[in-house]
Length: 302
Image 1 (tube, rainbow, N blue to C red):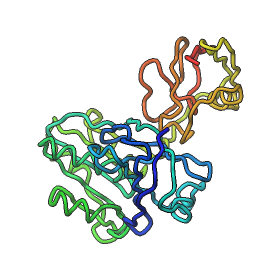
Image 2: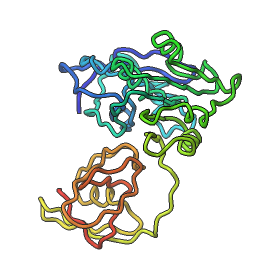
Image 3: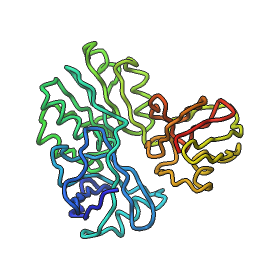
């Protein structure tokens, strides 16, 4: 973890604040557009936020936090109690939503889903690519960074305030794209579902804040062999692998516990994982908060 000092809290929409976190011990770890960090809050909660500042700025990170009225304590604490000058620990950035090279981009953002897109759009423009942002929200007042993005990027940004403008036609947007274009989409589940229906699979890249609803076979117990320590851990049908490892004394990091942040990644040495995450574990890895085993035993690097 990296120590930072909360330098600025600034409203950027009716229910959203921007936080600027300055490194307390020198330059912060580098990052690329699409990355996110774990922010450890003083109320013992850890939450994941996309970085929406300038990757060239190694002195500070910027994130934005929407006040969720059904908050489990994270966004509520940020909005009601967090003050400048507070020291906060922040993880090294992780990127499950990387910006791949392309001559053309279409960025689709809904509400707080704009956060990873801010730096992506800037990077695409800097690279000389043809880039368009379609930004959707209930009203402009509820859309973080809308004015900032229009001021910087002009006609590249199309804002749809649905109370006045309705929703954009994704099918028409898809028809206008070149085959070489890539589409990056982040927002509510309804937007992601509409994007998946409209755009070609090979073009579309999405990031979910909540896992997609999927059906799996009933969970079965399995055994985890921790090869470095020589310990064996039994995982019951009604518990997660992450919880079983934590109970056995392994301090596996965790954040979302829903398979969308990647903080609980573990290296698999042997056996066949059952991947239940939403971000796509790389070969030889798995996310222990939701994923399980198809084989009766797994060997992991712990």
